[in-house]
Image (cartoon, rainbow, N blue to C red; front, side):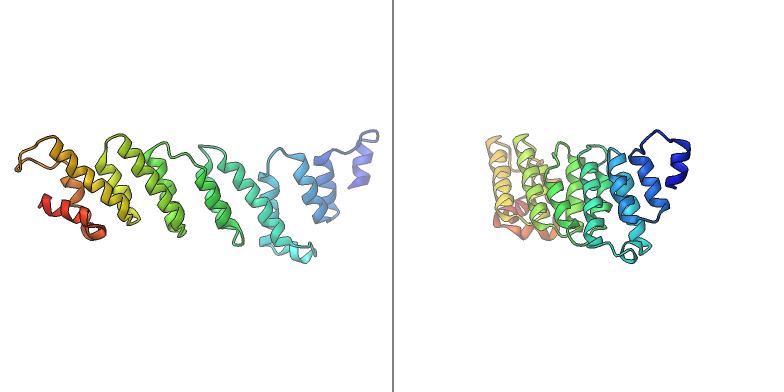
Length: 220
């Protein structure tokens, strides 16, 4: 491979891409990986190349030290790159999941940094965290969304998020605010309770706190 290159380009030094091809033709896997990191401006090629080598059991057969750590390092770096893009970040999830050693921890840290600007994004992040048993992150998301909806005066929406993680303190606060708002508006006893539809769908969640159970009985 080197001889062919010199025959075609006798006065030109090989660039990173050329060096990658030369090292590949000479079966120098580690050198191929190193050069692959240099000739591209992202981790897409090298992360997928190393993963393919891992799946084919080539990393171990070439006696590359710490080959599992090398694979995870490259894949997680590429996943972090995807995570930084607000339209591509959902694609990063599978990459994190493929790294058994530290993938879950890195994924949780990345999910924490996503801005919950819409209900759709919040639901998507919550579902990802719930599926992977990230309880602390689930609680944080629910509290953030409950607070957001309370600030907008949408108590029903706030309650829906609060009951997801059985947050008794937040549910109690929301239920109390619901009743206070109802009384403040001086409604007649036979008037329709505007949050009744949400309350009626909570089922067993109504026993999370006494205040919520009281509101449910009032709706009945």
